[in-house]
Amino acid sequence: MLRRFTFIAFGAAMALAIAGSSFAADAQKVISPEEAKSKQAYALGVAAYIWGYPMVVMQRSRGAMTTGGDAPVTPEVFNKTGKLFAPVNQVATAWGMLGPKFSAVQSGNSDTQYSVTWFDVAREPYVLEIPDAKGRYYTYQFIDAWTNNFHYASTRTMGSQKQAYALVAPGWKGALPADVIRVDTPTPTGFIIGRWFVADEKDVKAVNKIQEQVSMTPLSSWDKSYTPPKVPVVKPTAYTGDLAFFEQLGDTLVVNGALDTDGGVLGLLQNIGLTTDRGFDPSGLSDAEKKSLAKAVIDGEAMLAAKSADMGKTVNGWQLSPVLSEYFGTNYLFRAAIGYQAMFVNTPIEAYYPGAFTDKDGKVLDGSKSKYTLTFPKGKTPPVGAFWSVTLYDAKKRLMVENKLNRYKIGSADKLMAEKDGSTVLYIQADPPGKDKEANWLPAPKEPFYLLMRMYLPEIEVLNGQYEIPGVKRAK
Image 1 (cartoon, rainbow, N blue to C red):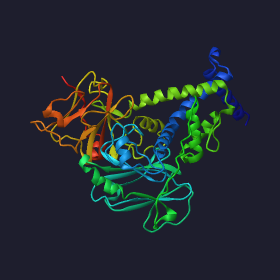
Image 2: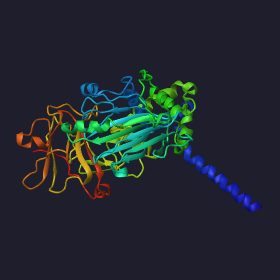
Image 3: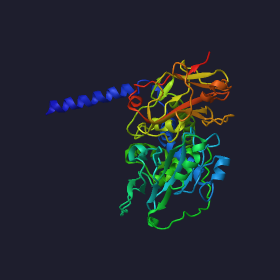
Image 4: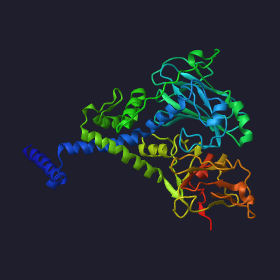
């Protein structure tokens, strides 16, 4: 027994000696407790920024899109301003194709017309009714407060049939009508994006007729005559100051809580005053710690900018995001970078969005310096079950860019001209390429820009990487 105890004691002593020599080998590097707490606040602040960025940006979008008026946007207002809004639990309809005026989210698309709903089902479930699509491609993406996709109703999942979905908050217990499908929402609030394929301006009215039939109804009024009420506009809280990000994150945490998988993160973040019951409380932080948090926001955004420009792998200059079955789970950095670059992206099996920030040779795309081409060999356009397109955005605001043609995307819905060898060449440049090439021209600004390719219902060769998108080349 004595020998065993001696061995254990010796082992413990050795462990302490090794630990001491590993972590305090250089006494000159030991920092004061105050400095250590400041550095800790910075590290946790960066973690909080990356973890909470999507939720905060989502709430800012929610504020912008639910306070435009006391009722959903009318066709006249939408077509004049490009603004898309409706009160919470009501349907906002994009009555036309989106363009540069639409600034509620970065990297919006012009392939589809939106029917969107910001929901809050904390008090009772709401029923979303989707009409018969009559063969037209559509997809409804259900997103929780953390920007995780948690359900789909689409051509892929349901075909063209009429559907009704009850959005049920965590903890709700009750019965639903037999003709209503239950969808459990991970958070009480969230966002639903309905996208209806639109071929061109001539197709807009046909899409509008379908969109007019989309509705949101409280469960207590289901199967009754119901008219959405007018809702007084209450301006969203203005968050200002160096700690504004943490204050807004704290407030949204109180409303939505955190997911079960995020318990470990919350355990760390309570050390900088972030909890789900009190939000953000900085009263226990020193001035140095608060300064560290402010710096964490600045550096955190720089980290997201860097990550968003280098996600997944790059093939021929196109960034290919990882093809994951779950968007996003606990992949916090990827989730935040996606939110920074293009909020509310679809899960790849529904739609896949490669991005190009540089040409094939790695040089930044810039319409003031070069003209570009994107050439698809004969039979090698993107393999999709629905449609594909390439949309251009300015690099600074991450929005579509005004141009004389009012053309912000180009793709399979357009009447593209083929070359004699059967290839399809897209011309991406500021100046017109000539009348004979205008059908294939995607106007570019005389400044840095980037491209997003959208492939709706991508075929398996897209998802497994067998299909390679040609690189964007500088024209000679």
